[in-house]
Image (cartoon, rainbow over all chains, first blue to last red; front, side, top):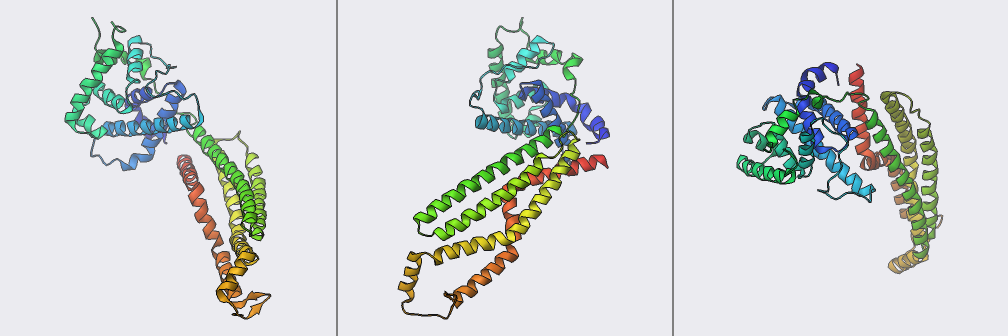
Length: 164
Length: 212
């Protein structure tokens, strides 16, 4: 990947990639691996961007797809090789943290959601309109509104009393 | 008062440290190691499978009263394993203390050499397998008895105790397999290692693109 491409086309949107990759990883090492893989795939797929959507939307979609693929691969690998594989939804202790404790708690709560719900809430928190979220996730906009409310309720329950 | 998740999100990311992107160092290091390790694992498993299969076929052939085939197949599979084990040793001599690009290029060179050796061998392997199969049946008593029952007193023209039409058919098949053995091997290789070889080519192409 050329330095120019990274600086001009990826770095301005690195915040998006960081936020998504953080939500799908439990360690700094995994986070860096996911981030690198996303950057690499953006660079490799750059010719497929036709300008139908905004570059940022395209990056969102690609980042989510790559994270979901990597998490599936990792799960398969763990199921195959690790007999101590932790079952889905079990809370895995997070090694990497933000300086803001509330944000850490919110991320921990988000990680307890299903993979698709994680994607939905991340996009919602990034203030993406329902139509765009629906477009990225591949469901109807009506469905997204209901889903967001349900996810927010779940997050509130998980965070209940933890954040003031 | 409890904060909303929206405000936690916004305020949390106001801190510039939360948005520091990791440096893209050694982008291909992990990938190179991963792809080569995966190949090594598959290669070892395939060699073990060949040894196991050679024993199974040997035992089954004795029970099925076609021991000639079993013995010939056993010899063949173990020769393939010995040759490939020697080739595999060459893979372990590749220096890992070089750049990812050089490491992958060395692996690619080893891979091409290995494929070339097996490609040449395949021109003999497939005809050999065919001969082993046919001989196995030809020298088995139950098969001869079945032929006798089917053809009765029909006595075709014989060459070295083999009916001439049988010999011509076999010869044609052996020639065809010798001609197409290499292609059959490439087809087989593609099924087993195609995915890894494609990834390897992509990685090297990426790296060459960067170096250009």
